[in-house]
Image (cartoon, rainbow, N blue to C red):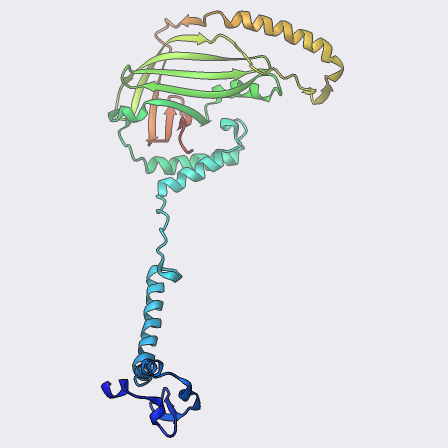
Length: 311
């Protein structure tokens, strides 16, 4: 190699170059190369097999790297975490509950599918003894579905367009004070209000609590910030145009707003419940950080989601 490094192209009578087969061939263009340049090229050209082999190895290495990393360029891509079987069941359940209006609008077929998913979830319950982890029960739970027919007349008020509808049904549990508060929020064109029952509970088994109601509370109506009277309302299957009565409606609206402001200043109406027979029990059959499934003493099912959770 030291001899090669001192080559001078001007010393040859017949200029040549070395190609991949390792033999010299005529190459007049070599005469125009400077010695340092040819010296550098000659060191590469005199070992063609080595560099050809190296290039193939490099390509193979790149291919191996691509296969190992899963994409070109050797950039690792984080794979999404696997969804648990319970997680998949929860997603199917929430998708199925969508549009059922807490069960009121669910068909018999949909109810059967919901019940099947609930049964499968109960078999995957991550909290087999909910009353041993009362802190997990803490907080406000929003009713997403129920098979309790006693609530259907109440939910049915939402069928009166633009008048009264049920905004929310919730249950708030305080495990430190052993209290339960059930609340139903109503809204209308002029005001919103709520009906609440307060109760105490006692632990009876790892899954069951006994509930005794203390009082009922009718909340003070709160005036709606933006009162909107619709142009049309549906009554007995017919659309009634209210635009000709805008002047009269506006006067009635102002008078109603004045009455609502007066009522809003009053304290809520509390109704004591002294009857010891007004009791119930609740069996929690599934519980995690965002979903709770309970069964009542009448065999009905309640599906509740934790306020603020992703569900």
